[in-house]
Length: 135
Length: 135
Image: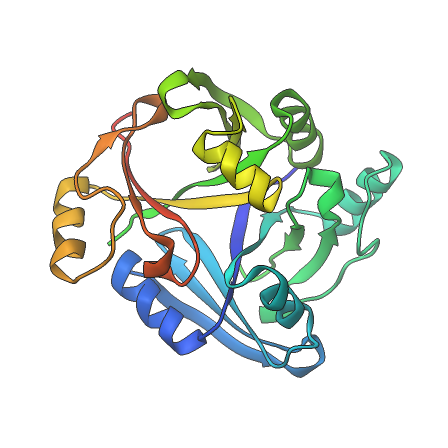
């Protein structure tokens, strides 16, 4: 049971240019920006009102986002749903036979606890569950 | 200047199955469901807390969503941003040289006024501006 959409993740070719574009088009403001070497990504979390857009820039072609960009080009990457209790939610989904990429919570960007659901479980969309203790 | 993300649009192969899946996975509830013959689409607007997911089912292979499905398969289709004054926003964007698909508001689904921005303007993501007078 998700509380809301936490963010929409977008793979971009040019992080600075995309931040500028989202600011100009949608009045977005940068909330966080972080490079996570072990995930091969530089990410910026933008706020648009109460909503959140996460821009993802690959640190190299062999990273997950790099492979996505090579295959699909820049574009929509995933939808993240906020839940109150991530571990309990994953247990519930596993018990229902839902195909998970992460069966237990792991540390994501920006201090979030995260777990990814396999796109086959949603009909083609990579979904992320997020527990956000920052608010 | 957008107020927030109004919805995330997702192209699906099976509308009933997807509604069931989003209900099971995310606790989504159906807000509206509508067939719009002239747009070649059957759509369901789902609420997940305060957020909104729009599931799009093509009425045929030659429709816009049908062509998207043939090219990319089921998956994330667009992000819609809510604005207070759609006509004024489009004027502002045109004056900035932003590439628009719709230069004036048109009637969308669920009684919304909408206009699409070309994916080239955002770096690869189809974006929609929405004016929602229902709240």
